[in-house]
Length: 173
Image (cartoon, rainbow, N blue to C red; front, side, top):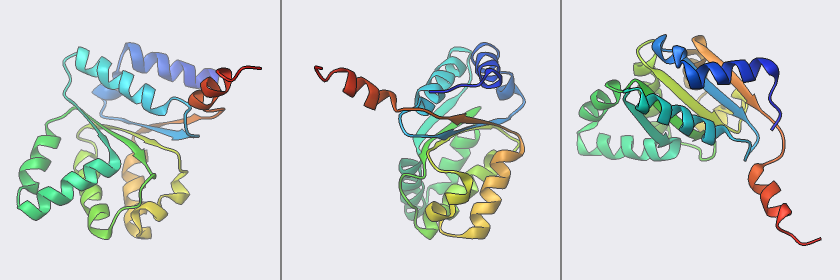
């Protein structure tokens, strides 16, 4: 993973101070598969918990499934109220699985609820321009990205996959 000096300063600040969380800012971790996005999001979530913050972690596709189930069961409002009580919502792997129109709209509403009220960490292997392929609607995707990036630190992860590198290191020469 290649990390610039400015990214290292942001990462160190995030780990030690969590000041971005107090300001209800977001962290958007974008980049190649296996470069540490989920690892970092999890570590920040654990640190936030350690400091008494309420944190929820979801793989994005799992959250969409839960939202659809709650919607069908008539318990969506109660579930969204529960999510609103968290200080940090972590959405992992946005972009791996496309969502239905209903799923996209439900996730948009959750992110709109979070806007300026709580922090969100998003991990994705897709650039923002590719998110329409996941959410299916250009206007919805633009509105969602606009809310996420407005008060955000955008971290770019590059380099070789740690998992791939470890697998290759196990092969005898």
